[in-house]
Amino acid sequence: MGTRGRPTFAKRQKEQARAERQKRKEERKEQRQAERADRGDLTPGADPDIAHIVPGPQPIYEEEEAV
Image (tube, rainbow, N blue to C red; front, side):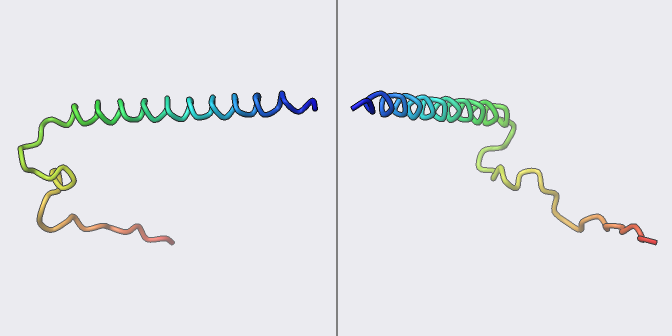
């Protein structure tokens, strides 16, 4: 009947791991919010995914000859 100690220890480790994951999640969320605030230079209605793409022909890629 000496197995009572292990489940409590395992549960504590599980709770600590959960708390650590939650902490990392909050840090990522704060970082995304800070990045979003820094990108305030877009015009209203502009799509941020394509805001800095230049239309037209693209520069020619010059391959180096492997000799």
